[in-house]
Length: 349
Image 1: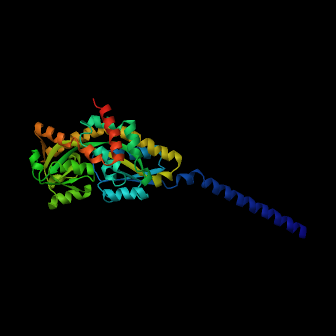
Image 2: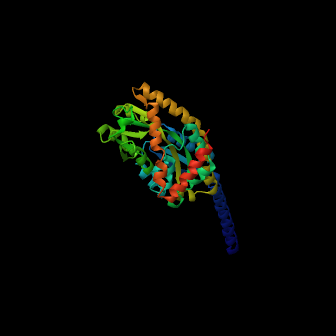
Image 3: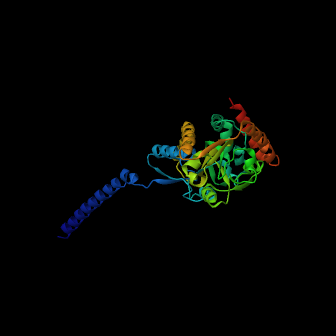
């Protein structure tokens, strides 16, 4: 009886182990591909101050390419119109990884590295087409995208936004009309020197603060582009836009180096490759966006003003030595400007 009892017990143990084995196998199968599919995607927040213009279009193209190429492993979220804070806060958030990507004109990174300012040199390029060829120049891309690497930023994109124009509460039809005006500029010594030569008081200001400042009379006007004025409904505060064309406004996209370094190698490649493709995509779109903005501005009751040809030429002559004067006491800035200026001359047609 005792032997039979032991055999019965042994058979029971075997059956129990078989059941457990089946359950473990089923659990392993359940935790396989299905579990991988359920893994939460990596969130990539893309932040910018602009809205419905070239920087925003680049962000949308970039995000779409990343979403597609990553197969859903990265989930992009775009936050335009300074939803995640002022431009300095957006850049700071990207440095520390709270924001994964920031897109803004390069001048706003000048607190990180002064060489970012060289793209804001007036007279660097004459046309939008030349500016687009400049951003595609290998030496310029290597220089600009490499800046900020030691400060938590990985440059991924350099492209063109729009020519500069001045929005003002009172019309600026002649160079003399600039004198005494208080104008918002980008945070750049190149811009403060440029517009200071016109007799204005330059005030560096983040984009999100411009419209309230215009409405409250804290400034008389601002430097940006018609696309911005139109998209953000500046007509409610000022209706006059003077096209000065200089400097051309560029866009610069950087991702958080901390975040990027934590990605698998294949996703890093997707982040870099998608940026290159987005830079190509945005160029023809930029031309269309800028053209539409001018027409929409006039249709909404705004006025576009060109300086008389002789005064435009005089203004450009006044601007011609800005880059040399600003960079002459800064060897690194001077060298960077020479690299960019030589490339601009190569791509001029």
